[in-house]
Length: 374
Ligand SMILES: *Cc1c(COP(=O)(O)O)cnc(C)c1O
Image 1 (cartoon, rainbow, N blue to C red):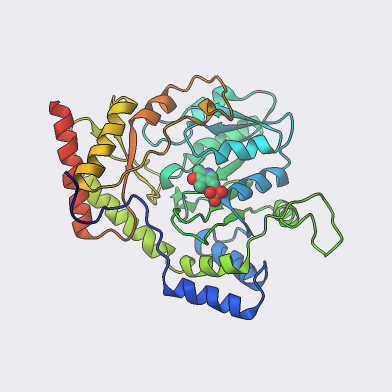
Image 2: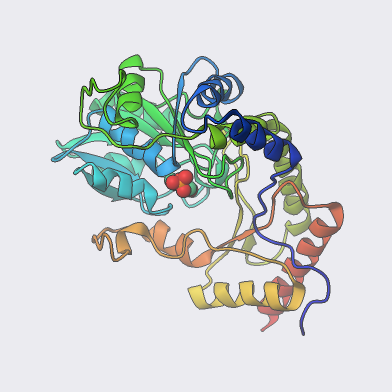
């Protein structure tokens, strides 16, 4: 049976007339490369999301990670501990500095990197730990700060999915020697493509500014070998508009999640998101778990949701990063393995209406009940 009305998509970027007008203003100015819009976006990003911590704009979240790592002095011979249950960019950025990403397991409730697993993976070459605030929930920064103090490690935050999230009342992006945000269209806010490095360390900030621009501060006075990872004023203009909306959108994601939590509570074999006591969750993804499911069962659940109910769902992430062709590293990661086969993410984006939420709840309930009796 094909569903009659429109499908509910798992992600839906909101780009409206204000963004179009902002782009038009930049185009009309004739100056489109990195300039005053980028400078204003950097200031405003800090003000709204990470007060007191300077921001440096780049052309993607991956570039933010890569340049942040280089600026923090990570390179060949170093080990950086990362989760394998994440987008490949987390480990890619480490590998591209010449350092080794070492994969550690996750906490099965929050899906974020587990501090105890990280502690067991520390060696004399470990320079840093890079937790990911996965799905928009802050990792346990109290535990990571303690661990970093004990072992003399740097902390880097992959905050690509976690704009406006916090731990113990403090915003993500303010804990790390540097933190990286993504502004890709499906993230909680976008600049088209783009990324932001936040860092309290002026030397790291300056190094990222050099690295994004061929190693130059003054033209033709290149101080280091750098890249071209600049953000354009066109993208910054979009990002500035989105920044005026991110907090309202976040509140809407959170109220959508609360409605889903309530509607899906008590379904057999289905675990709704668990939020740690000190964390705020900004629901980049609303990720449920089909307890004990195989990957095939989970995938069938998603197909039925889509084909019979018109409800989109996604899997983030079906393959642990250490198992990807690009890494193929042996690691004992039982929680990562079971999460990769049991999770699915339901629509939670701010454009959902009451009727959409009701449709998602009744569809998921129906598929879960059919599965339980099969
Ligand atoms: C999206 C994402 C990135 C990379 O950001 P891009 O802007 O796509 O380069 C890095 N880490 C995580 C966890 C992400 O979700």
